[in-house]
Image (tube, rainbow, N blue to C red; front, side):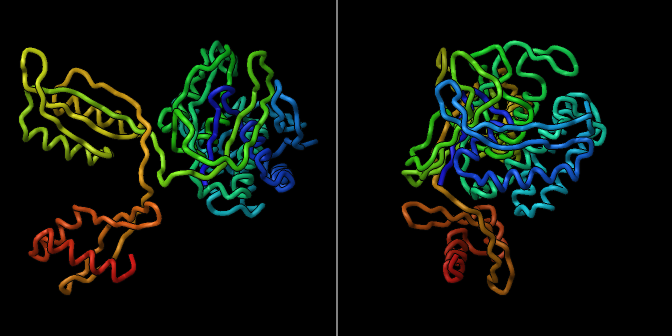
Length: 407
């Protein structure tokens, strides 16, 4: 099963995401009954009415959240909302994965405010996000994805529309996207673009939920057979497009998974091989997926080494620092690429070899119903030295043991 979240036209808010999940089949009664209990854990907030109903949103039949609340607070500590979320998820008996998801969403929101204002986590105050709305969006989404069994599925996110223009909030006027949106999305693998209007299309709560729901960004839909589509309506109306978030659920029509990577490239022509070898080790230790060095000829017949690194967003900046400090390069080219990969899982095996115990790491890949496993080379190297055997002999010995175990 694969799920695609598509915020590339209308962006995403917490209620849009929640509504799209209801539209695709999440049990709305379970969600309503669950979030109503939030009044027990958040003082001075009363839910007078909550429901989901169908609405025509600029020609699209979507689901909308109907919410009436009675509230007498203008700000709350982030930790107060976090504690309410933790207590509520326990009260309603969510799965452990759903509890962790809900807590991670509010942690992301609190952390963004902490970094922006330079405050300790415990001192962060919410203004716009202080309402019980925030709790409803986060816990409601946790209930929905738990009900739909989405936490174990691959979730792909299309580029996120954030809008443009200016936004007004408790600290005054700021260009859109506001600092909270940028901070939340900064270390994620998701990509953003401006969108079609001078208005806020993505909210901090929506972004916080999204980055915890999907770690995979893609420019195009994967090859898939569509089984269901959900449309979640936002509160605003726009002339040029439907303000709805789209979620598409289906089955992949090939045996590959898709993810998004960064490719870093730089040319160096005056760096000794020993330094390049040391640089490769440092880059791999800092999260690179792969490093390659190619020999070539550049302008005026000069010999060069083209360094190519494959990594993700999280490790990109650390790796760029290493490239500059180790080689002295004055520029690095960066490109983003989607890639199809064979599904694989990581395993550990405890083996007795020649009377000695070792823990061996290996990966199992599955393609068209057939499994193949590959032993981590560092483990092969370490064990072969300990046993005084060749790499080839050690690999055959370990492979036979793992196959006998049914690994």
